[in-house]
Image 1: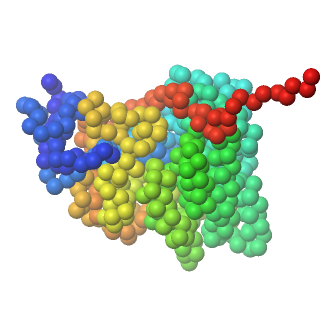
Image 2 (image 1 turned 180 degrees about the vertical axis):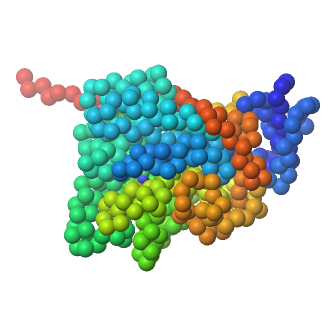
Length: 481
Ligand code: URP
Ligand code: ZN
Ligand code: ZN
């Protein structure tokens, strides 16, 4: 065997459980997990006192996204490098075609941008409009390019928002293809109206942002998307669930047996809405993202949703805009580019606030930071597992590593950090991306272009067709003679 590495002395943690074991890697793959492994000639990586876990998968990032008149400051290389420093070895980013733009054209553009990634990546493709070409391109993307999820923005009116007609067309098409429909759930019409009303009352600063996007606006859209998906028998995934209202819609649907999944952002679990009232305009603007940060009662509910399995995945929605970019909305909160970062910090924040508080076991931590995403987006066990044959995307996790999060020490390409000053215990000592050490002892060793595009096959027929409506008898016409 050639190009062997063995990770020795650690505790292997997967979504199934924990055990004292070594991990043998050949080239890019895990070849064995166990004790007394034959490893002559292997490079030894010491993991004594550490946990050995699947590298994190962030199911929701926006590297170098053109958005709200500017472009997100983090590119695919800097972003995947920062991710590796935090123990994340794969991102799922978004292709977002402009209305009327062919999906395939946008997809090719994003693939070019992403070629500089240092770690593996894959794409959800947004449906922002509808015609026959969109229908056709969805087919091409699933059959020829390994895309199995399509995103729908129910907010951002006059830009990328989908109305119900687009949702219905696209959810049906996704269902027929065995793909997963995903939504950003906020009622864009209501947001638009509330923004206008709040601005007209003279509220022009970032405090206007959460006022224009209250939880009800998210709850309405979440419920609407869920019910549309239910009627159509289409599986659905809600991104960045931020409030009780949306969580309740998800919970009800899941308890009714509907195939609905939901994601929560690490920042929505630990950061509240008080930042919008900070006396510093810049500080408040740094927290402008959608859905906005919420009050503590919503955070508590989100934690319970994660613990109870109603929320299955954790993400960052990493979409960085530097302070001068945020300043585009200096006189009008509606023009502040929406987005916050955190791809580097997600794992530490979740370990500290999740595992160290007893809310999550280490195994549950693995489930919500990688395995569940890999399963939902159909790349398990290649990703999100440590089974022989899996890609050697591994994080060696030091549960005692303590740091104070700061933009000064961050690898993210943004001039502030929304977690600034937060002390966290637990962090990535070493990260391997397909068998190559890309982060160790505080040193980043990522290589531009080393990341691969990961294709995600569509789901089998049984994936769809679980709605109540589909389980009823076939409708029959009334015989009126
Ligand atoms: O504020 C956000 N979340 N910006 C990125 C685009 C999106 O809505 O996910
Ligand atoms: Zn969104
Ligand atoms: Zn997003």
